[in-house]
Length: 307
Image (cartoon, rainbow, N blue to C red):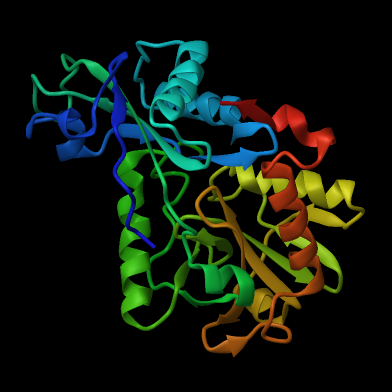
Protein backbone atom coordinates (compact mmCIF):
# COMPACT_ATOMS: atom_id res chain seq x y z
CA UNK A 1 0.00 0.00 0.00
CA UNK A 2 2.66 2.53 1.02
CA UNK A 3 5.51 1.47 -1.26
CA UNK A 4 6.31 3.38 -4.43
CA UNK A 5 8.70 2.87 -7.34
CA UNK A 6 11.51 5.47 -7.58
CA UNK A 7 11.74 7.27 -10.93
CA UNK A 8 14.43 9.25 -12.78
CA UNK A 9 13.62 12.84 -11.88
CA UNK A 10 11.94 15.12 -9.37
CA UNK A 11 11.06 18.71 -10.23
CA UNK A 12 12.64 20.88 -7.52
CA UNK A 13 12.58 24.68 -7.47
CA UNK A 14 12.14 25.09 -11.19
CA UNK A 15 14.29 22.32 -12.63
CA UNK A 16 14.39 18.56 -12.97
CA UNK A 17 17.00 16.92 -10.76
CA UNK A 18 17.95 13.23 -10.42
CA UNK A 19 15.71 11.41 -7.95
CA UNK A 20 18.45 10.84 -5.36
CA UNK A 21 19.65 14.45 -5.57
CA UNK A 22 16.28 15.92 -4.54
CA UNK A 23 17.35 16.50 -0.93
CA UNK A 24 16.89 19.23 1.69
CA UNK A 25 18.78 20.35 4.78
CA UNK A 26 17.91 18.79 8.13
CA UNK A 27 16.99 22.27 9.40
CA UNK A 28 14.28 22.70 6.78
CA UNK A 29 11.57 24.66 8.60
CA UNK A 30 8.63 22.56 7.41
CA UNK A 31 10.34 19.39 8.65
CA UNK A 32 10.29 20.79 12.18
CA UNK A 33 7.01 22.69 12.33
CA UNK A 34 4.79 21.16 9.64
CA UNK A 35 3.87 24.40 7.88
CA UNK A 36 3.82 23.31 4.27
CA UNK A 37 1.11 22.30 1.80
CA UNK A 38 0.77 19.48 -0.66
CA UNK A 39 -1.48 17.75 -3.16
CA UNK A 40 -2.12 14.20 -4.29
CA UNK A 41 -2.88 13.90 -8.01
CA UNK A 42 -3.25 10.93 -10.35
CA UNK A 43 -2.47 10.44 -14.02
CA UNK A 44 -4.06 7.59 -15.96
CA UNK A 45 -3.47 5.77 -19.22
CA UNK A 46 -5.75 7.24 -21.90
CA UNK A 47 -6.73 5.91 -25.34
CA UNK A 48 -4.25 8.36 -26.89
CA UNK A 49 -1.53 8.50 -24.20
CA UNK A 50 -1.48 9.73 -20.63
CA UNK A 51 -3.72 12.24 -18.88
CA UNK A 52 -3.86 13.87 -15.44
CA UNK A 53 -7.23 13.90 -13.72
CA UNK A 54 -8.42 17.39 -12.72
CA UNK A 55 -4.89 18.81 -12.53
CA UNK A 56 -5.91 22.51 -12.60
CA UNK A 57 -8.27 21.96 -9.66
CA UNK A 58 -5.49 20.31 -7.67
CA UNK A 59 -3.08 23.15 -8.37
CA UNK A 60 -5.78 25.68 -7.46
CA UNK A 61 -6.21 23.92 -4.11
CA UNK A 62 -2.45 23.82 -3.56
CA UNK A 63 -2.23 27.58 -4.08
CA UNK A 64 -5.31 28.18 -1.93
CA UNK A 65 -3.78 26.10 0.86
CA UNK A 66 -0.58 28.13 0.60
CA UNK A 67 -2.52 31.38 0.75
CA UNK A 68 -4.33 30.21 3.89
CA UNK A 69 -0.93 29.55 5.48
CA UNK A 70 0.44 32.95 4.38
CA UNK A 71 2.90 31.26 2.01
CA UNK A 72 3.57 33.07 -1.26
CA UNK A 73 4.18 30.68 -4.13
CA UNK A 74 7.23 31.53 -6.25
CA UNK A 75 5.53 29.93 -9.27
CA UNK A 76 2.23 30.66 -11.01
CA UNK A 77 -0.67 28.30 -11.55
CA UNK A 78 0.27 27.74 -15.19
CA UNK A 79 3.92 27.15 -14.34
CA UNK A 80 2.99 24.50 -11.78
CA UNK A 81 0.58 22.75 -14.14
CA UNK A 82 3.29 22.65 -16.80
CA UNK A 83 5.84 21.40 -14.26
CA UNK A 84 3.58 18.45 -13.37
CA UNK A 85 3.18 17.52 -17.03
CA UNK A 86 6.90 17.94 -17.72
CA UNK A 87 7.87 15.72 -14.79
CA UNK A 88 5.57 12.96 -15.97
CA UNK A 89 6.92 13.19 -19.51
CA UNK A 90 10.57 13.15 -18.48
CA UNK A 91 9.95 10.12 -16.29
CA UNK A 92 8.19 8.37 -19.16
CA UNK A 93 5.00 7.92 -17.14
CA UNK A 94 1.44 7.81 -18.42
CA UNK A 95 -0.22 6.36 -15.33
CA UNK A 96 1.25 7.64 -12.06
CA UNK A 97 0.75 9.44 -8.76
CA UNK A 98 1.93 13.04 -8.45
CA UNK A 99 2.91 14.76 -5.20
CA UNK A 100 3.37 18.55 -5.46
CA UNK A 101 4.79 19.88 -2.18
CA UNK A 102 5.29 23.54 -1.24
CA UNK A 103 7.46 23.95 1.83
CA UNK A 104 9.61 26.38 3.80
CA UNK A 105 13.34 25.82 3.51
CA UNK A 106 16.22 26.23 5.95
CA UNK A 107 17.95 29.41 7.10
CA UNK A 108 15.90 30.31 10.15
CA UNK A 109 14.19 28.50 13.02
CA UNK A 110 11.42 29.35 15.44
CA UNK A 111 7.66 29.55 15.13
CA UNK A 112 7.66 33.13 13.92
CA UNK A 113 10.52 32.84 11.44
CA UNK A 114 9.81 34.32 8.01
CA UNK A 115 13.24 34.43 6.37
CA UNK A 116 13.08 30.97 4.78
CA UNK A 117 12.74 30.54 1.04
CA UNK A 118 9.52 28.98 -0.25
CA UNK A 119 10.45 25.81 -2.12
CA UNK A 120 8.41 23.49 -4.35
CA UNK A 121 9.00 19.85 -5.24
CA UNK A 122 6.95 17.73 -7.64
CA UNK A 123 7.51 14.00 -7.53
CA UNK A 124 5.84 11.44 -9.79
CA UNK A 125 5.87 7.70 -9.23
CA UNK A 126 3.93 4.52 -9.76
CA UNK A 127 1.78 3.85 -6.72
CA UNK A 128 -0.82 1.12 -6.52
CA UNK A 129 -4.33 1.19 -5.11
CA UNK A 130 -4.07 2.88 -1.71
CA UNK A 131 -6.38 0.54 0.22
CA UNK A 132 -5.55 -2.54 -1.83
CA UNK A 133 -6.99 -4.18 -4.93
CA UNK A 134 -9.07 -6.55 -2.83
CA UNK A 135 -10.45 -3.59 -0.90
CA UNK A 136 -11.60 -1.92 -4.12
CA UNK A 137 -13.28 -5.14 -5.27
CA UNK A 138 -14.73 -6.47 -2.02
CA UNK A 139 -14.69 -3.59 0.45
CA UNK A 140 -12.59 -2.75 3.48
CA UNK A 141 -13.03 -2.97 7.25
CA UNK A 142 -13.11 0.41 8.99
CA UNK A 143 -13.07 1.49 12.62
CA UNK A 144 -14.19 4.74 14.22
CA UNK A 145 -11.03 6.16 15.74
CA UNK A 146 -10.62 7.45 19.29
CA UNK A 147 -8.95 10.49 17.65
CA UNK A 148 -11.41 13.18 16.57
CA UNK A 149 -11.02 15.33 13.47
CA UNK A 150 -9.57 18.73 14.38
CA UNK A 151 -12.05 21.50 15.10
CA UNK A 152 -12.53 24.31 12.59
CA UNK A 153 -11.71 26.67 15.45
CA UNK A 154 -8.26 25.10 15.81
CA UNK A 155 -7.17 24.56 12.22
CA UNK A 156 -7.77 25.33 8.54
CA UNK A 157 -9.44 22.14 7.41
CA UNK A 158 -10.01 23.10 3.79
CA UNK A 159 -6.24 23.37 3.31
CA UNK A 160 -3.97 20.35 2.80
CA UNK A 161 -1.40 21.35 5.40
CA UNK A 162 1.44 18.93 6.09
CA UNK A 163 1.26 19.15 9.88
CA UNK A 164 -2.48 18.58 10.01
CA UNK A 165 -1.97 15.01 8.85
CA UNK A 166 -0.42 13.98 12.18
CA UNK A 167 -4.02 13.63 13.37
CA UNK A 168 -4.77 11.27 10.48
CA UNK A 169 -1.55 9.29 10.88
CA UNK A 170 -2.29 8.61 14.54
CA UNK A 171 -5.86 7.58 13.76
CA UNK A 172 -4.71 5.29 10.94
CA UNK A 173 -1.98 3.64 13.00
CA UNK A 174 -4.40 3.03 15.84
CA UNK A 175 -6.94 1.11 13.77
CA UNK A 176 -4.44 -0.74 11.58
CA UNK A 177 -2.82 -2.14 14.70
CA UNK A 178 -6.28 -3.35 15.69
CA UNK A 179 -6.66 -5.27 12.43
CA UNK A 180 -8.72 -2.76 10.43
CA UNK A 181 -7.96 -1.17 7.07
CA UNK A 182 -8.98 2.45 7.65
CA UNK A 183 -10.00 4.91 10.35
CA UNK A 184 -13.15 7.01 10.39
CA UNK A 185 -12.91 10.24 12.36
CA UNK A 186 -15.80 12.06 14.03
CA UNK A 187 -15.80 15.83 14.47
CA UNK A 188 -15.84 17.71 17.76
CA UNK A 189 -19.65 17.39 17.95
CA UNK A 190 -19.68 13.62 17.36
CA UNK A 191 -20.82 13.78 13.75
CA UNK A 192 -19.03 11.82 11.01
CA UNK A 193 -16.26 13.91 9.43
CA UNK A 194 -14.09 11.80 7.10
CA UNK A 195 -11.63 8.93 7.01
CA UNK A 196 -7.92 9.40 7.66
CA UNK A 197 -7.28 10.40 4.06
CA UNK A 198 -10.63 10.17 2.30
CA UNK A 199 -14.10 11.68 2.23
CA UNK A 200 -16.99 9.39 3.14
CA UNK A 201 -20.33 8.63 1.49
CA UNK A 202 -23.32 6.57 2.65
CA UNK A 203 -26.27 5.22 0.68
CA UNK A 204 -29.44 5.16 2.76
CA UNK A 205 -32.68 4.01 1.10
CA UNK A 206 -31.30 4.77 -2.35
CA UNK A 207 -30.13 8.26 -1.41
CA UNK A 208 -26.43 9.18 -1.58
CA UNK A 209 -25.31 11.27 1.41
CA UNK A 210 -22.02 12.87 2.40
CA UNK A 211 -21.06 15.41 5.10
CA UNK A 212 -21.34 19.05 3.95
CA UNK A 213 -18.43 21.35 3.18
CA UNK A 214 -19.46 23.50 6.13
CA UNK A 215 -18.27 20.64 8.34
CA UNK A 216 -14.80 19.57 9.46
CA UNK A 217 -13.83 17.98 6.14
CA UNK A 218 -11.52 18.56 3.21
CA UNK A 219 -13.11 19.82 0.01
CA UNK A 220 -12.15 16.65 -1.83
CA UNK A 221 -11.76 16.77 -5.60
CA UNK A 222 -12.77 13.11 -5.96
CA UNK A 223 -15.69 13.87 -3.63
CA UNK A 224 -16.80 16.67 -5.95
CA UNK A 225 -16.37 14.41 -8.97
CA UNK A 226 -18.54 11.70 -7.41
CA UNK A 227 -21.31 14.18 -6.59
CA UNK A 228 -21.23 15.40 -10.19
CA UNK A 229 -21.31 11.86 -11.58
CA UNK A 230 -24.14 10.84 -9.23
CA UNK A 231 -26.32 13.71 -10.39
CA UNK A 232 -25.50 13.00 -14.04
CA UNK A 233 -26.47 9.35 -13.49
CA UNK A 234 -29.76 10.30 -11.83
CA UNK A 235 -28.71 9.15 -8.36
CA UNK A 236 -30.26 11.39 -5.66
CA UNK A 237 -27.38 12.99 -3.74
CA UNK A 238 -27.27 15.40 -0.80
CA UNK A 239 -24.66 16.98 1.42
CA UNK A 240 -25.83 16.82 5.02
CA UNK A 241 -24.54 15.77 8.45
CA UNK A 242 -24.20 12.06 9.16
CA UNK A 243 -24.09 10.35 12.53
CA UNK A 244 -22.15 7.20 13.33
CA UNK A 245 -25.31 5.15 13.74
CA UNK A 246 -26.45 6.26 10.29
CA UNK A 247 -23.32 4.63 8.93
CA UNK A 248 -24.22 1.42 10.74
CA UNK A 249 -27.71 1.40 9.22
CA UNK A 250 -26.59 2.40 5.72
CA UNK A 251 -27.12 0.09 2.76
CA UNK A 252 -23.73 1.08 1.33
CA UNK A 253 -20.71 3.10 2.47
CA UNK A 254 -17.69 4.07 0.41
CA UNK A 255 -14.64 6.32 0.64
CA UNK A 256 -13.33 8.71 -2.00
CA UNK A 257 -9.93 10.25 -2.58
CA UNK A 258 -7.21 10.60 -5.18
CA UNK A 259 -5.21 7.74 -3.67
CA UNK A 260 -8.19 5.55 -2.70
CA UNK A 261 -10.33 6.48 -5.74
CA UNK A 262 -13.71 4.90 -4.80
CA UNK A 263 -13.27 2.19 -2.17
CA UNK A 264 -16.28 0.37 -0.68
CA UNK A 265 -16.58 -0.21 3.08
CA UNK A 266 -18.03 -3.57 3.98
CA UNK A 267 -17.76 -3.28 7.77
CA UNK A 268 -17.57 -0.51 10.38
CA UNK A 269 -16.85 -1.20 14.06
CA UNK A 270 -17.39 -4.94 13.44
CA UNK A 271 -20.85 -4.26 12.04
CA UNK A 272 -21.64 -5.43 8.52
CA UNK A 273 -22.71 -2.67 6.16
CA UNK A 274 -25.68 -3.72 4.03
CA UNK A 275 -25.01 -7.10 2.46
CA UNK A 276 -21.34 -6.93 3.38
CA UNK A 277 -20.40 -6.47 -0.28
CA UNK A 278 -20.13 -3.41 -2.57
CA UNK A 279 -23.67 -2.29 -3.39
CA UNK A 280 -25.16 -1.36 -6.77
CA UNK A 281 -24.76 2.40 -6.41
CA UNK A 282 -21.15 2.05 -5.30
CA UNK A 283 -20.41 -0.27 -8.20
CA UNK A 284 -22.07 2.01 -10.72
CA UNK A 285 -20.12 5.02 -9.52
CA UNK A 286 -16.89 3.02 -9.44
CA UNK A 287 -17.33 1.84 -13.03
CA UNK A 288 -18.24 5.30 -14.28
CA UNK A 289 -15.37 6.95 -12.41
CA UNK A 290 -12.86 4.47 -13.85
CA UNK A 291 -14.14 5.21 -17.36
CA UNK A 292 -13.95 8.96 -16.76
CA UNK A 293 -10.37 9.06 -15.46
CA UNK A 294 -9.20 6.89 -18.36
CA UNK A 295 -10.73 9.18 -20.96
CA UNK A 296 -13.46 6.80 -22.13
CA UNK A 297 -16.35 9.24 -21.67
CA UNK A 298 -16.01 12.29 -23.96
CA UNK A 299 -18.40 14.44 -21.91
CA UNK A 300 -15.82 14.54 -19.10
CA UNK A 301 -12.77 15.12 -21.29
CA UNK A 302 -12.41 18.63 -19.82
CA UNK A 303 -11.31 16.93 -16.59
CA UNK A 304 -8.25 15.43 -18.28
CA UNK A 305 -4.97 17.29 -18.90
CA UNK A 306 -3.00 15.49 -21.65
CA UNK A 307 0.59 14.44 -20.93
